[in-house]
Image (cartoon, rainbow, N blue to C red):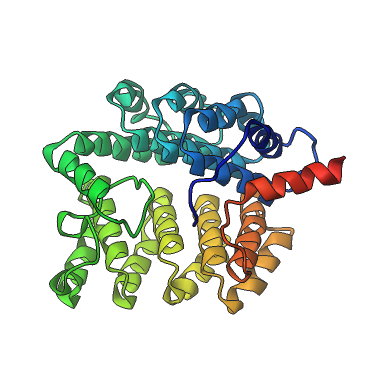
Length: 338
């Protein structure tokens, strides 16, 4: 969503103030915009500002914000982020959703130096953390394999539909570009669905099927992905909702709305469903996002996700050039606070 922002020292100061809410008056969705602007910089200066969250952002009361800080540190893919991510993962008093995201970010950075701590917490008492460490370890191993290195070189030479660093690569034939007709066939979708739902397979392999179905992206592929919401792993289901947020297919809206409204579902899964709905931004999702932002029985992370999702919905239905426009929003906040 736009090119890398060109920023000055003053811009960085404003982004830091907005992200860390030093004035105490910055709405959550503007803090998110500042964060994603920093993420787009992809440099150590951005890492340093986001990592100040170890004293400010990661000390925030919002698990949603802290989880997003960890996610963005992983997407920037700088080893300078590893110390703060390790401190979050190893803090057993931290919200599991935040610890999980720290482990996933370590997998995204894919430094072999992270292997010892990931192995240690692959036996964590929390299932989401355990499973994330398992997947992150498998990803680092794959990234350093011959196929992984070939894939990295190919990514540098080809335009990518999805530029995110995912927790697992798609299955081999769907690693790059638009799928060939035979790879998007009903029989292949059926085979990938079976792998997706096969609990006997390692989670990493199931995730590979998940991201392959994302790359196919047809309504039948969406239906196959939606079947994954029947799984008993909150981590697995939350990743499906995230994938739907990448696909932006209106065909996934009914499944996402069912997840958002399910009080028995994990908050982590519902939060991801809310943000996916905000990105898809069709008219019918708006009243649901407003409702669950305001309901008294809505968990905090769901309420806050709906607040952010409404901001995303408004962006998608506006003429704004890019969502990560934290430079504009941070300056607006400065003006209000002046």
